[in-house]
Figure 1 (cartoon, helix red, strand yellow):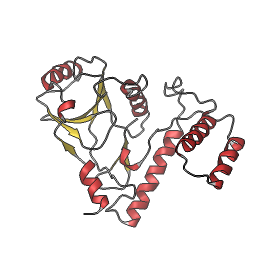
Figure 2 (cartoon, helix red, strand yellow; figure 1 turned 90 degrees about the vertical axis):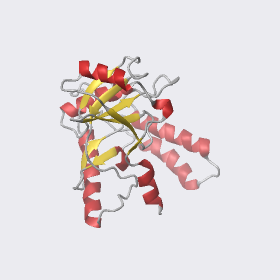
Figure 3 (cartoon, helix red, strand yellow; figure 1 turned 180 degrees about the vertical axis):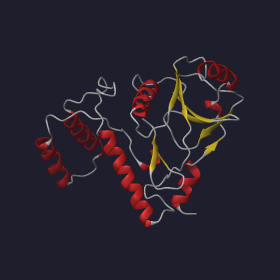
Amino acid sequence: MNGAMDRQSLFAGTRSVAPALQFDSARLETYLARKLKGFAGPIKIEQFKGGQSNPTYRLETRDARYVLRRKPPGPLLPSAHAIEREYRVTEALYRSGFPVPRPLVLCEDSTVVGTAFYLMEHVEGRVFWEPYAPGLSAMERRALFDSLNETIARLHSFDPEALGLGDFGRPEGYVSRQIKRWSAQYRASQSEEIEEMERLMAWLPQVAPTHSQPALIHGDYRLDNCIVHAEEPRIVAVLDW
């Protein structure tokens, strides 16, 4: 079995919920019955196999499928695993017609499943765990990569203020901060001097724009953070905000 097949079998689909990430399904059912119109248990709960910093579950009832995304249990860094921010961004983008799952419920009450979580609609489709999208023809792969580019360009075209996200981040000096961070990370892991890298790190600060128009970015935009249409080579949802 080759590496691509290994990644696909390791990360695609769902599995039984890991013991450390289990919670009381009856308590969740009671909560969702109060908060979500049309919800009716019982629910079958499975955990998505793909690695996530925020544990993610598929919930299935007789009539519907949902996805639950929660903070992990245990002590967390102050700015990490920001489920609340993720829900807010997803909600704003969904209202604007951007391809994200429809957000349904945000719960900040940790007594329901043990940590804060939000619920969204389940989007049917494919997830490719290799960046070259194995199994597609050359024409399909080209169309998929065009869709990836079109999707991220569309994200960058939004005005954060118009979406109600104007208080997110610090747009001033963004490019310069990124160059500084990348250079520091390179220095921290450097094992030998590479002349080309030295020239690049000296050149980039000189040409970085001092002012730029604010835009939304995805901090980890890649193929396996997208859902691809079940039959067509196009993006139908972007995940992991």
